[in-house]
Image (cartoon, rainbow, N blue to C red; front, side):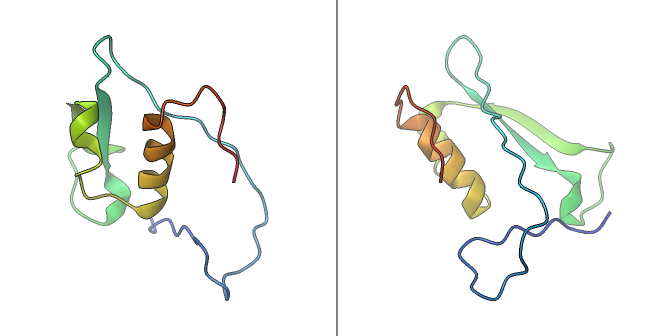
Amino acid sequence: MPPRIDYYNVSGAAKPNSLIPSVNVVTNTTGDIPMIRRSDNGEPTPSNESVEVHWVPRDQVEALPMDRSMALWIGHYLADTALPHIG
């Protein structure tokens, strides 16, 4: 599978051909967030979708290495506003 490319503030990026809204923050009863290492990063994987899944406490999530767009989504969630973030 080719790697997915997310363009974030790239002036020369191709125009999008579709926009798909997504909401995907899930927590357990203690507020931990599951972090998944996907297999589309080109590394060998024992499954079709993920190589690792860990529940990470809220106060440790932002210290993990991740794509900038994922960090933004999680940061908006951790801000604890009752409103959706669009933008």
